[in-house]
Length: 517
Image (cartoon, rainbow, N blue to C red; front, side, top):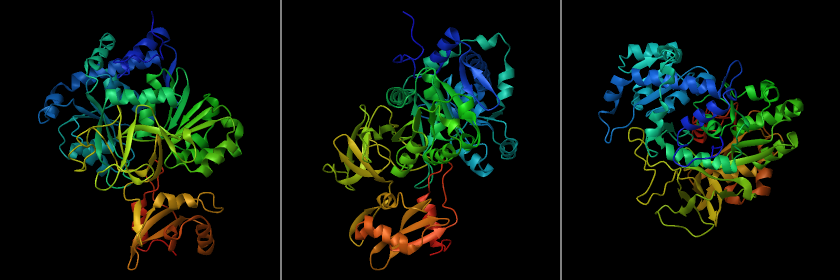
């Protein structure tokens, strides 16, 4: 009996190649990747990726032996992708994934020094790039790996070799073999690198299919560079479920263009900051966004006021806020309501105290999970922090409370502080200000205090209400120990590339006197 293109096949769809091959044969003109000025059908993408994969395999013959000689057991060669457009990056990702290789994506717009640092730290055997500055820097540094352009690889082989059976490379790779290298977001410290296996990503894709609306033929828009782990993952989930992936180099194509309307987008996957900007645009141009049925975003940074604003501006769209990390995979989403996260069925969870012991239901502690999508460890060269314990439980030390299958997130590691003998979650302080008129962005931090040990400080962005109004708002909503003792304003709060406010960087600004009281 023939297989449906969107039907999961255990042990096979740990690679994209079988799905590409199947749709390329059954429906070759179906759009696969769509950019502002270019697109590829499944038939074209399948041929293109096999041609590039075959050329890369040939070019890597010598580099592979060099790159894996020091690893025990040997790892596949690491291939870094650093391309200037999201469309070409997507093409390269699909091609690199088609063989027994580990892919990683470096943003083409990052400083050259950071790009070089990541390429060297990951032990890359090859860099696929069209960025002249990184080519020059690698050459000047005497880097011995392969540096090649995507178009060079696409032109290397003859038409006949484009039909070589390179799909066998991916199918031959074990499900538990690593194929992707990611880094933590860096919101709580320097980024840490970790590997994902095909089996772990397949578990994530099962969640996308069952809970997050990834479906056959659905048009999904995920704007922003592929260096965003969310955008990169969306490419995999969309192609693995037979959908249509719409890409953009910049987040602002979501609200500064009419692409959502013109390209008949039904599903949006974006960071919370982008969804907030979309809401403002939808109020100005409602017809541009009336085709969106589903918005998928990260739950930890999506407050209730933003959810209400989306419902008002886009009444026909359903919003799902998921909770998870690159290391742990998807953990749950907000279908439970009341700021709780309902765990997905495959996730086991417990909350532990500082001594590692399990805490009672509702007690505040570190979340530990065990699921098929968890990575095993961080790469030793990027951190000494353990990711898992001896029993397969993993944690990035998110803080919260667990009651049955519902988890309440209160902050990242370091976001729960003790002030005057009271334990306070900085995220809960921030949530108390959600919905305050005139307040656009804010961040709670802790700073040293001779009497309390630590005191709570609220830092606001731009034109904000005066301290007296902020103080009155806090008094009506927060326990005395959780109320900010100091108030600062900065012109702009520091953020990650994905729009998350960097609490540690905010604290640094205040410490050096960059905020005004």
